[in-house]
Image (cartoon, rainbow, N blue to C red; front, side, top):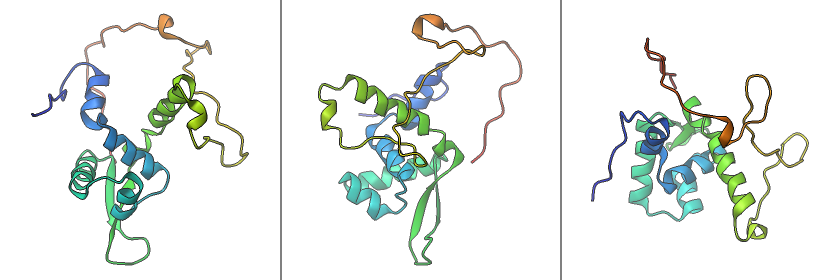
Length: 157
């Protein structure tokens, strides 16, 4: 069964899910943020069938979330490196992690903590602030139509 595409949908959340909405893609991105770069590293970490991993990596490269590069050790292999677009998913991955830490039925089973590399202290919970510094929650925001005009320029990898 073919999945419905949200490409061109007016909702930015639906459009993002069209690109990164399956769990394997997010876990590959997580692994890339942790420094994994080679097919074998992703395969070993995820235990994913090679054909599925190949398809997800190809899609992430096509979407310019990952790019391929010659292996850093000079071998004949290629590596997958995060682009700016891929690194832009870091707050999304952190938000998912923090949501799980707050609401999981068994948070004590989570084997790692996200810490500041420089201080070794746990990272503060992500928060959304207004331009004037107020902490915002769901009741403090709303949606309004984008004013007509030129569309924003797309960022490049």
